[in-house]
Image 1 (spheres, rainbow, N blue to C red):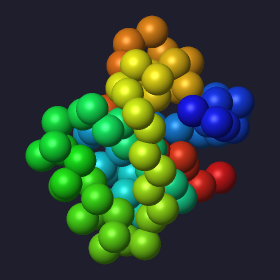
Image 2 (cartoon, helix red, strand yellow):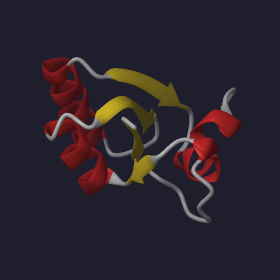
Image 3 (cartoon, rainbow, N blue to C red):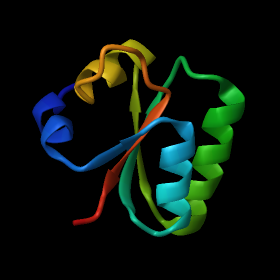
Image 4 (cartoon, rainbow, N blue to C red):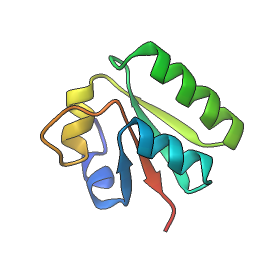
Length: 83
């Protein structure tokens, strides 16, 4: 990812459930989605983000997204939260 530091410094919610909830509650400003995540999950969050006007940024792998979020496992998606 090109902006690893920006994601590490931001308030984020990591994972499918937390990201979905953040978007539904209007707390998310941007959502990062791993391209190698389950396509059913990706399609659901894309529709939800479009509905709520949230920007989506795609990342190549779940491992790369996990590292950008400072966790030791992969992450399918993560949401940057409004402050």
